[in-house]
Length: 343
Image 1 (cartoon, one colour):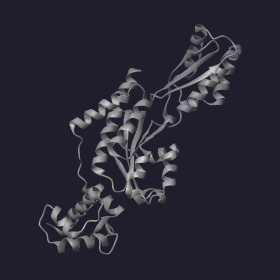
Image 2: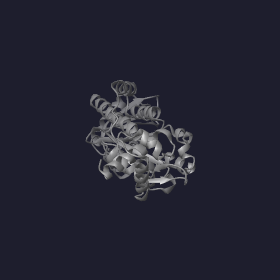
Image 3: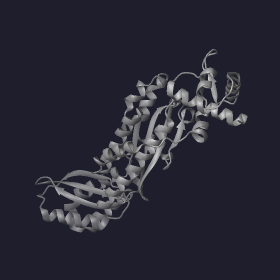
Image 4: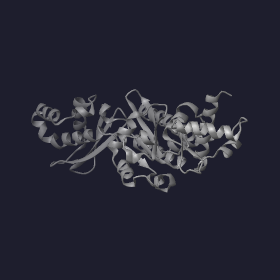
């Protein structure tokens, strides 16, 4: 075997052994796991050279070697072999998601909870960016003599609601009139286009009717503002603090990250249909260097796509986690597409 190829095989074996055991890997132990014959001295020399290249490191003088972030990167990009989900695992994932496919929000919450359970990591599901959504339909549901609910549905499947009150009795005919007026003016517009200026113009065009519609228009504007944001569902945060590898992590900073949907959404902006992996020191915040993030995109339609992610220690089972994430993202995209087609 060529020396370079042999060293890559040794790097692969070190990474996979360390992922499995969490223990530094020595040359003698490695010799027992390699699928080719080589002396312990040769393995020791190759490991020393891999260390000089910055791919392995030694935590203590007498201990074995562990991968560096760069070593993990080479492993992920060049050496990692895919571990496909079994038919039984795929069926279980799809069946679980199907039970929550009545609404996009429920589907994404279920995906995050399922991924967290499968992998033991923290899982994140982000809705499609609201700023690309357009208004598909606005409905009103009477909830009392003087109150009603606005139901705004967008092209990304997002459903936003809001209550409003009028100082006159609301009748079924008035509800029909509300729907006719607002759908004629706002259907097909981007949710980001429902601005105060637009609403003022709409009110002015209604003439005397604007007195009846002021609270209705305000409710539509508020629902559109909420629809323009990206919703982020996070599950399994506590898993991170049960992992010994993260004992040195900046716990406060990790919780801040998980508590700010804007930062999470930015992190998920790197997503593609194939999993994208950020490893340790590749994270923009040094306080998060004990973590790795695996991100994958789901697609329901050209204008409806979002992201799923798993957050865990750098010493995570990348082949297994990548397979679970990519299949779940595929299933979410397909179920969300069916949901949108049925609306």
